[in-house]
Length: 189
Ligand SMILES: Cc1cc2nc3c(=O)[nH]c(=O)nc-3n(C[C@H](O)[C@H](O)[C@H](O)COP(=O)(O)O)c2cc1C
Image (cartoon, rainbow, N blue to C red; front, side, top):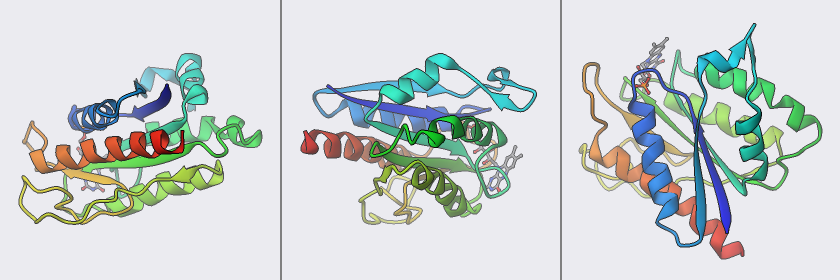
Protein backbone atom coordinates (compact mmCIF):
# COMPACT_ATOMS: atom_id res chain seq x y z
CA UNK A 1 0.00 0.00 0.00
CA UNK A 2 1.33 3.45 -0.96
CA UNK A 3 1.59 5.88 1.94
CA UNK A 4 0.80 9.59 1.64
CA UNK A 5 1.31 11.99 4.57
CA UNK A 6 -0.48 15.34 4.40
CA UNK A 7 0.95 17.79 6.92
CA UNK A 8 -0.36 21.31 7.54
CA UNK A 9 -0.86 24.10 10.07
CA UNK A 10 -3.96 26.23 10.63
CA UNK A 11 -5.45 28.78 13.00
CA UNK A 12 -9.03 29.38 11.87
CA UNK A 13 -9.76 26.16 9.97
CA UNK A 14 -9.57 26.93 6.26
CA UNK A 15 -6.27 25.17 5.69
CA UNK A 16 -7.75 22.09 7.37
CA UNK A 17 -10.63 22.08 4.85
CA UNK A 18 -8.07 22.21 2.04
CA UNK A 19 -5.92 19.51 3.69
CA UNK A 20 -8.99 17.28 4.10
CA UNK A 21 -9.78 17.68 0.39
CA UNK A 22 -6.20 16.61 -0.45
CA UNK A 23 -6.64 13.60 1.85
CA UNK A 24 -9.99 12.68 0.24
CA UNK A 25 -8.41 12.97 -3.21
CA UNK A 26 -5.53 10.68 -2.26
CA UNK A 27 -7.93 8.20 -0.67
CA UNK A 28 -9.99 8.11 -3.88
CA UNK A 29 -7.13 6.13 -5.46
CA UNK A 30 -7.38 2.49 -4.39
CA UNK A 31 -4.49 1.14 -2.38
CA UNK A 32 -3.48 4.45 -0.82
CA UNK A 33 -3.00 4.84 2.91
CA UNK A 34 -3.30 8.51 3.90
CA UNK A 35 -2.32 10.23 7.16
CA UNK A 36 -3.46 13.73 8.06
CA UNK A 37 -0.92 15.40 10.35
CA UNK A 38 -1.25 18.74 12.08
CA UNK A 39 1.54 21.07 13.13
CA UNK A 40 0.51 22.67 16.42
CA UNK A 41 2.13 25.54 18.28
CA UNK A 42 2.50 23.48 21.47
CA UNK A 43 4.96 21.19 19.61
CA UNK A 44 7.29 24.20 19.34
CA UNK A 45 9.39 24.77 22.43
CA UNK A 46 11.88 27.63 22.50
CA UNK A 47 11.44 27.91 18.73
CA UNK A 48 12.19 24.24 18.06
CA UNK A 49 9.45 21.99 16.65
CA UNK A 50 9.43 18.36 17.78
CA UNK A 51 6.87 15.57 17.44
CA UNK A 52 8.30 12.07 17.10
CA UNK A 53 5.05 10.47 15.97
CA UNK A 54 4.61 12.96 13.09
CA UNK A 55 8.28 12.65 12.12
CA UNK A 56 8.00 8.84 12.03
CA UNK A 57 4.85 9.01 9.88
CA UNK A 58 6.59 11.35 7.42
CA UNK A 59 9.66 9.11 7.35
CA UNK A 60 7.48 6.10 6.49
CA UNK A 61 5.53 7.91 3.76
CA UNK A 62 6.14 7.54 0.02
CA UNK A 63 4.87 11.10 -0.51
CA UNK A 64 4.54 14.11 1.77
CA UNK A 65 2.12 16.91 0.90
CA UNK A 66 2.97 20.13 2.72
CA UNK A 67 0.27 22.70 3.47
CA UNK A 68 0.26 26.09 5.13
CA UNK A 69 -1.70 29.30 5.31
CA UNK A 70 0.18 32.13 3.61
CA UNK A 71 1.46 34.56 6.21
CA UNK A 72 3.26 37.67 5.03
CA UNK A 73 3.73 36.08 1.62
CA UNK A 74 5.33 32.90 2.92
CA UNK A 75 4.76 29.81 5.06
CA UNK A 76 3.53 30.38 8.60
CA UNK A 77 6.26 30.49 11.26
CA UNK A 78 4.92 27.21 12.68
CA UNK A 79 5.42 25.42 9.34
CA UNK A 80 8.88 26.96 9.07
CA UNK A 81 9.69 25.63 12.55
CA UNK A 82 8.68 22.15 11.32
CA UNK A 83 10.78 22.60 8.15
CA UNK A 84 13.78 23.73 10.18
CA UNK A 85 13.46 20.82 12.60
CA UNK A 86 13.47 18.42 9.64
CA UNK A 87 16.99 19.60 8.77
CA UNK A 88 18.12 16.67 10.92
CA UNK A 89 16.50 14.39 8.32
CA UNK A 90 18.01 16.51 5.52
CA UNK A 91 21.52 15.86 6.88
CA UNK A 92 21.02 12.15 6.22
CA UNK A 93 18.93 12.81 3.06
CA UNK A 94 16.29 10.65 4.69
CA UNK A 95 13.50 11.88 2.40
CA UNK A 96 15.52 11.50 -0.81
CA UNK A 97 13.35 10.26 -3.72
CA UNK A 98 10.10 10.59 -1.77
CA UNK A 99 7.43 12.53 -3.65
CA UNK A 100 6.33 15.97 -2.47
CA UNK A 101 3.56 18.43 -3.28
CA UNK A 102 2.17 21.58 -1.69
CA UNK A 103 -0.90 23.67 -1.06
CA UNK A 104 -1.65 27.00 0.56
CA UNK A 105 -4.66 29.05 1.61
CA UNK A 106 -4.80 32.82 2.02
CA UNK A 107 -7.08 35.80 2.31
CA UNK A 108 -5.96 37.72 -0.77
CA UNK A 109 -6.70 36.61 -4.32
CA UNK A 110 -2.97 36.64 -4.92
CA UNK A 111 -1.66 37.33 -1.43
CA UNK A 112 1.75 36.19 -2.73
CA UNK A 113 0.75 32.53 -2.44
CA UNK A 114 3.17 31.56 -5.21
CA UNK A 115 6.06 32.52 -2.95
CA UNK A 116 4.68 30.19 -0.28
CA UNK A 117 4.52 27.27 -2.71
CA UNK A 118 8.03 28.08 -3.86
CA UNK A 119 9.25 27.95 -0.24
CA UNK A 120 7.67 24.51 0.16
CA UNK A 121 9.24 23.48 -3.17
CA UNK A 122 12.68 24.74 -2.11
CA UNK A 123 12.46 22.68 1.07
CA UNK A 124 11.50 19.61 -0.95
CA UNK A 125 14.43 20.21 -3.32
CA UNK A 126 16.84 20.45 -0.38
CA UNK A 127 15.56 17.05 0.71
CA UNK A 128 16.09 15.70 -2.87
CA UNK A 129 12.40 14.92 -3.11
CA UNK A 130 10.45 14.74 -6.39
CA UNK A 131 7.89 17.55 -6.70
CA UNK A 132 4.46 16.81 -8.16
CA UNK A 133 2.79 19.80 -9.81
CA UNK A 134 -0.97 20.40 -9.75
CA UNK A 135 -1.53 19.12 -13.29
CA UNK A 136 -4.81 20.95 -13.88
CA UNK A 137 -5.70 23.60 -16.44
CA UNK A 138 -7.78 26.61 -15.41
CA UNK A 139 -11.46 25.70 -15.70
CA UNK A 140 -12.47 29.34 -15.21
CA UNK A 141 -12.20 32.09 -12.64
CA UNK A 142 -15.47 31.45 -10.78
CA UNK A 143 -15.47 30.15 -7.21
CA UNK A 144 -16.79 26.78 -8.46
CA UNK A 145 -13.98 26.34 -10.95
CA UNK A 146 -10.97 24.04 -10.68
CA UNK A 147 -7.68 25.96 -10.49
CA UNK A 148 -9.48 29.32 -10.62
CA UNK A 149 -6.35 30.95 -9.15
CA UNK A 150 -4.16 29.70 -12.01
CA UNK A 151 -1.59 27.86 -9.95
CA UNK A 152 0.52 25.12 -11.45
CA UNK A 153 3.14 24.63 -8.73
CA UNK A 154 0.54 23.32 -6.28
CA UNK A 155 -3.00 23.89 -5.03
CA UNK A 156 -4.05 27.40 -4.01
CA UNK A 157 -7.16 28.30 -2.04
CA UNK A 158 -8.56 31.69 -1.04
CA UNK A 159 -11.40 32.87 1.14
CA UNK A 160 -12.37 36.44 1.83
CA UNK A 161 -12.14 37.71 5.40
CA UNK A 162 -15.21 36.54 7.37
CA UNK A 163 -15.99 33.66 4.98
CA UNK A 164 -16.07 30.37 6.88
CA UNK A 165 -16.29 27.82 4.09
CA UNK A 166 -13.64 27.43 1.45
CA UNK A 167 -14.80 27.94 -2.12
CA UNK A 168 -15.92 24.71 -3.81
CA UNK A 169 -13.57 25.16 -6.76
CA UNK A 170 -10.58 25.41 -4.43
CA UNK A 171 -11.60 22.23 -2.61
CA UNK A 172 -12.05 20.44 -5.95
CA UNK A 173 -8.56 21.64 -6.90
CA UNK A 174 -7.08 20.30 -3.64
CA UNK A 175 -8.91 16.99 -4.16
CA UNK A 176 -7.34 16.71 -7.60
CA UNK A 177 -3.87 17.37 -6.17
CA UNK A 178 -4.30 14.56 -3.63
CA UNK A 179 -5.58 12.20 -6.33
CA UNK A 180 -2.65 13.11 -8.59
CA UNK A 181 -0.09 12.36 -5.89
CA UNK A 182 -1.69 8.98 -5.18
CA UNK A 183 -2.01 8.19 -8.90
CA UNK A 184 1.68 8.92 -9.50
CA UNK A 185 2.57 6.58 -6.63
CA UNK A 186 0.31 3.80 -7.90
CA UNK A 187 1.65 4.13 -11.46
CA UNK A 188 5.21 3.71 -10.26
CA UNK A 189 4.28 0.59 -8.37
C1 LIG B 1 0.09 37.01 10.36
C2 LIG B 1 -0.77 36.88 9.16
C3 LIG B 1 -0.24 37.19 7.94
C4 LIG B 1 -1.03 37.05 6.78
N1 LIG B 1 -0.45 37.31 5.58
C5 LIG B 1 -1.19 37.12 4.45
C6 LIG B 1 -0.60 37.34 3.18
O1 LIG B 1 0.57 37.66 3.04
N2 LIG B 1 -1.39 37.15 2.10
C7 LIG B 1 -2.71 36.81 2.19
O2 LIG B 1 -3.36 36.71 1.16
N3 LIG B 1 -3.27 36.56 3.38
C8 LIG B 1 -2.55 36.69 4.52
N4 LIG B 1 -3.11 36.42 5.74
C9 LIG B 1 -4.43 35.79 5.79
C10 LIG B 1 -4.23 34.30 6.01
O3 LIG B 1 -3.65 33.71 4.87
C11 LIG B 1 -5.53 33.59 6.35
O4 LIG B 1 -6.00 34.15 7.56
C12 LIG B 1 -5.29 32.12 6.54
O5 LIG B 1 -4.97 31.51 5.31
C13 LIG B 1 -6.48 31.46 7.17
O6 LIG B 1 -6.20 30.08 7.23
P1 LIG B 1 -6.67 29.20 8.46
O7 LIG B 1 -8.15 29.39 8.59
O8 LIG B 1 -6.31 27.80 8.07
O9 LIG B 1 -5.93 29.65 9.68
C14 LIG B 1 -2.36 36.60 6.88
C15 LIG B 1 -2.90 36.32 8.15
C16 LIG B 1 -2.12 36.44 9.27
C17 LIG B 1 -2.71 36.12 10.62
